[in-house]
Image 1: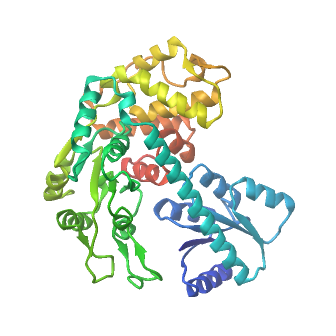
Image 2 (image 1 turned 45 degrees about the horizontal axis):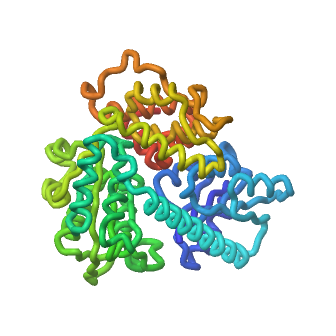
Image 3 (image 1 turned 90 degrees about the vertical axis):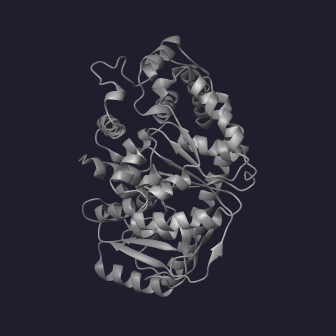
Length: 442
């Protein structure tokens, strides 16, 4: 179990790291809220021990930033000045529990284990909810354009096979939906689809996440961990943003694709699983191969079946059905009775070029449902420009330039709030942080 201790008292940090490490936890520490948020952007944790009173960014502010991320770890608040008001505010901000200093170590460990189980149950419920959505909403219901009907026809042909599939398309075009649909029609649909975004993990963590590690494989590896290839055994593994995978790991993935065999990090035993791999990217891998950033042999091994998703601006006849699908989804999720769009809203959707593609459309509709006071979405509920004045045509700029421009636009709308921007973009905070770093956006 990975635990982050965020407290400005150095003796307490040292003590907690020492004692919790003895109990088998992997522990990292932060001296303030800013450092804690930096660690959370680059690493994953199961539980956070969070002090309320810290200089700069305090514990409540950290919790508020994490609250928008459904995948955030369970939080246990540590406070030296417990009041009813503090406890209420902590729980409202998303804390699992709180403890008043000084506290007994045994008591803390019990609460950590409970928080961890709570977090696992929450994730399990989210996965079950996603599986229900996947089973209830196959891709064919929103295929109106010729391009998508052809893709659906191809999916039905290749789904029963075990061949790797490679999906290409701009950010937000629905690559994960395509992967879900392949899984939905496959003989492997009895096992849940397992997905990993390769851009959300650091180079040091991603190999362990994919192939697992043995106890003692590295510092603080106190227990054996099964990687996602083992979790996906007899099922399907979806590797999104495959272009972000480190070169060294690409070689190991290639060997795995060829043989189905692998070793956990730090292990000698050869393990074998039966997994179908679907990979996706929004990058031009041919350019990356020429630049030496992606293995040509891995590209050919993944690219047995290629699906290229057209951007939303090239298949506008799909927009009404996709929009109604998201309207139904969020009306139900938000317990609203919104059931239709005003004609001028659909006209606006058709006139917009959707640089963020389907993901941008989904986020705009979710926001519109939240703002709506009637049974119909009207123009005032929708926050997109009426025209694309002065905009360079998509063909004249690279996908990366478009993505950078779109992120800057959304950041401006969110007044620089990265948590809000990641929500609007439909990506998690770690992915947004990596993209900001990549494009030099401050």
